[in-house]
Image (tube, rainbow, N blue to C red; front, side, top):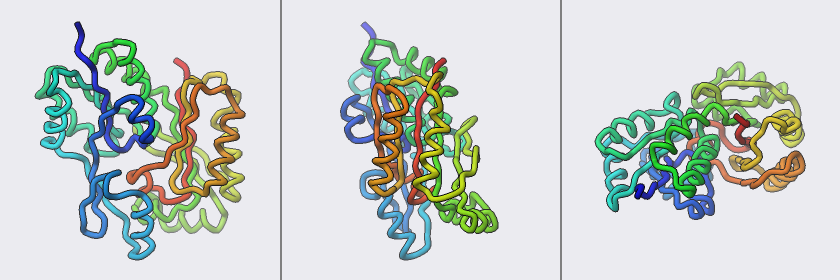
Length: 283
């Protein structure tokens, strides 16, 4: 009889509490250094705290990966009842989380770590797929191998209204940020090869730009896996989110449409008024 498989994720995949409960996903959390204090991502700090701190002090937080010892402790807990583990992490190109988890997992015979090569609900899509594999009875090794084969199918992108956080975080120049503000440019950030890059620059008001962006990303939906789609945002106006969700639902017969709030990692890098539509392509 095969071992029970526990599906785990770091705290960057931005899954809702409802999805975490539905699929019994265990979470290992990054830390957030804000104003000289260290917080635990998603427990005693949230994006609104980050925004308030930035508005008051002009300071962005620093996020940190769990160290090897923390991962060992996490794996000890999850395997205590003889369970196998598959853990999903933020892209190894963006954080040391994957490498620390990989090194810790070497101490355990049935613990597998998957580098999502993504962030936010781009990784969350892989977690949901793995949870459904576990429900179907696949072993931890099978789930890890199949999940790794799905990584390149994830279509993850976001539109950013304001480049202030990217500039403050050293991810774009002052000239680029100023030009984008003057020209009302809204970059579409995509994830490819584990890294973020600018795919397209839209121009205009944020709400209207999002309409064009959604139409561009979904297109005819001919090569999209329609099982799940995420509309993930960082502090956007409720009306704008509702309009985007309605447009996404009208564009294709999705199995499930998930609306989630971006957590501390994405919010620290992109700032308020960031919205993305994330899904998987067909093999």
